[in-house]
Length: 508
Image 1 (cartoon, rainbow, N blue to C red):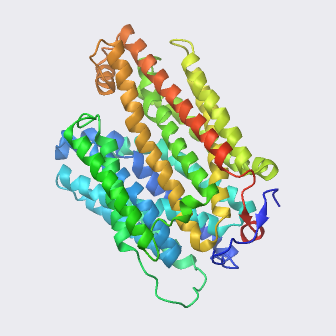
Image 2 (image 1 turned 90 degrees about the horizontal axis):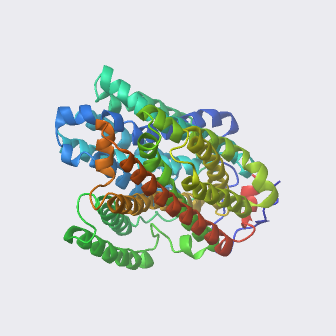
Image 3 (image 1 turned 180 degrees about the vertical axis):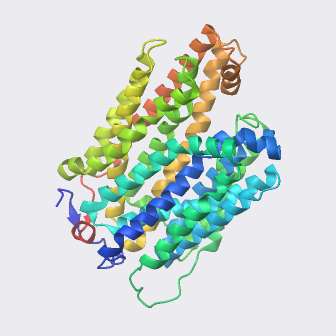
């Protein structure tokens, strides 16, 4: 038994089921289904990237192809809290089946797309299913195993995500070059069909207590979807498709703030709100939400800007530059799997503080690397950063899932993942503006990250340009270190020293 504090449920919280939803002998089949579903969702986030030239060459629409990624990301992000609440209301199995079916339908439609507009629309359909896959898989991982064994399943899911993220571009490139880009989407069909079959056959949830018919907060779900979609669109497209102070940005941000107020009004009046007030009233969950939002923010620095740095400053080819980034996917799941030995001794919060504090120091160290330096130097920092973030993220996720009962776990997990995804979107907008601002200053008012990328592709980069890229990426890493420091302060000041783990979570 860990040294985390355990207690019974707080007043007003419904009791958790006495037994897990799956018999131990059937866990392997269900875990295999979860890994397939997670791998499918993770692969789809990256596999399209290397096939863009073939897709644009076939369908056209070069000016809007970025929405192949933005549309999918927006749909996943805004549906996470909705699916979390639905899984608490109706159970994990129906939500996972529905989400997988929507994702596979979107995949099939993407393969049949006749122009870029249709492909973007069908990618959004995929994202509507992808939100259910990501959130419900993480929730079921906590349902299947007691607290002591959860790091095992989470480490498996982290490994699947990391492997898929690294393999995605390579798989997409191979399919686009030697088959057809449409196979990028068709490949999901057999994988998803197998995952669905395993879930239908082997996942059996406990019988629900008879009671009044659940009331679905459709108005709240629609308001959350609209609010998230408008605000995230403003963040994704601001400074890219239009200037930050232009009419579209002002209109979207103003509309988004008005929708935020509408969401608050609707959710306060709803009998079963999609985003219950307790998600933010409970100090532990609120602190974790904010901390993981900061994690999403800081993750943008290496994932978006390090490959450009490796090509422009270190002079690496794209594949080698991708390797410099990908090394953190090796240490992250290993650190996450081993984190249980730390948080069992010193608690969830203190483990996360060590992880994010170390991450802040590593991010601060990046600008002090020698110029131009050797590739192993940033690669080593990324390896250590992955280990630090594994020690930070997993204890917080497991901690939150362990302080709520079964009927609240989907909502709590959805809120955590939503905050992390939103942080990534905000980070892309914020750090993109910082990088472009530094580049404009260093290059005399002309230049942004897109033009730098084109220069790299054409082989026309100069020493002056390389120094400008280094300065821009250094500024981004300073910003990421500030985000890590913010997460540290949030946990230190808001999170309790001992998470109030429920007895049912600790002892089951």
